[in-house]
Amino acid sequence: MTQGNTLDTQTPPPAGPDRRRFGVGALASLFAVTAPQAQARAGSASLDPTAWSHAWPPADVIPLWPDVPPGRIAGFEVPVTPTGWAGGAWPAAFLRRTAMPTLNVFRPANPTGEAMLVCPGGAYVFVSAAIEGVDVARVFNALGVTVFVLSYRLPGEGWQDRANVPLQDAQRAMRLIRTHARAFGIAPERVGVLGFSAGGHLAATLAVDHAEPVYQPVDSADRQSARPAYAGLIYPVILTDGPLAHVRSRTELLGPSPSPEQAAHRSPNLRVSLATPPCFLAHAADDTTVSIDNSLAMYAALRATKIVCEGHFFAEGQHAFGTGRADQPSELWPQLFERWARSTLRQVSPG
Image (cartoon, rainbow, N blue to C red; front, top):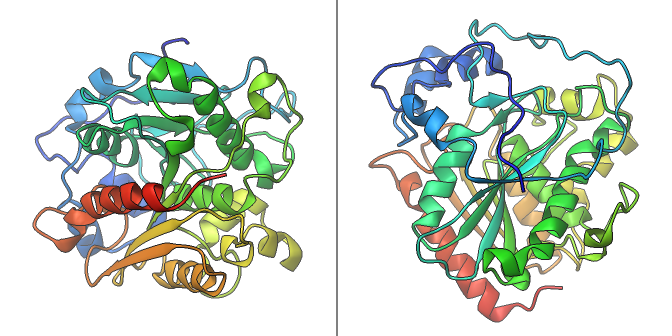
């Protein structure tokens, strides 16, 4: 295990007392949301940006791959500013240029033996490691859950077979967590996945395609199952085709002109099977960035296949509400999810 991580450090995190201002303006620029939508995002409790450097990286950081990850394109240079970025300063908690993906381990004071792989979002342009990583770890550590925040590779940053790159990292992460389960005091059969936005797409893809061979095994850890015990999908990108698809996430993952077959292969709602683990969904009806129809499509597919599932759909909350907006119903989703997960683990025997 090593300490440290790969992130773009060209600009420090902005200072200021607003707990959620860190990254909100940048998100607004990236997704072209309106000023009221950006303001609405500021209602969620979040990590004070001045505390970022103390919270990240945690004490335990596990590299995913023993050597260069699969499919590195030699000589590829990641642009400092991605196409379409108009946010000015690049927030330090928006991880990019990740050549060596990592598991970042946050341990609870009173562990229950449960663990979660957390996949932050960011449209596959960056990894939002504060509000959908460190904040999430803080909340679930308090509930006794050991949290592994995944700093995964971005498909457009010089990797072959770009549509499989995030899934390679997610599968490998689940296998490493189970390999190190005893060291972290967790039960390998009680490891779930939780993802947000594009990270929700990654979590959903892991849930439906955990057994898809997307990389050559590199060591004994790859004999472990990559199937999560359950999946939490929070305002997830699901659809990769049609008017309700999130175009930026699809383009970053699949390239500018994916075929219908490529899009269908990475639409998790079309890949649900009897091997899919139980799923929990939460989404806001007023989300104008990733339509709630993404979650509804996944929910319908799960129900049609008779997979255990639960959905919480809030009237308000917009996108990127993280661990929930203060004094709104979305603030309760972590507790609902934790109770659902424990109940599900008692009833369902994961493979």
